Image (tube, rainbow, N blue to C red; front, side, top):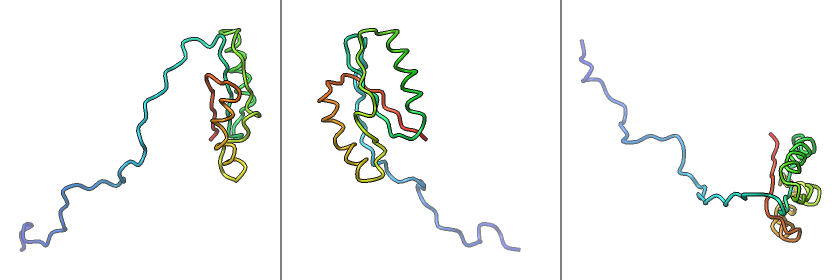
Length: 112
């Protein structure tokens, strides 16, 4: 009868990790606006999941809380899903469009 310590062993590794190293750069979050009164709020969407319904509900709530807020609707920015050339162009143009409309804050929705 063979003893267990006489059996051939599998290779031993110091560390095994099934995931690769993270390629995402950690960035600091932006400072949250204290009050949206007098601010311009953009709605930005990827045209996938109930955006018009959700944005309308959010807009109504924000208008009640911050009657001085101004809103720029999602259609101004176009579809930002990014799966075709037009959508990729919309993503590339987004910073300039946000500046053009003097946007202070944005509600960005991507559907699943």
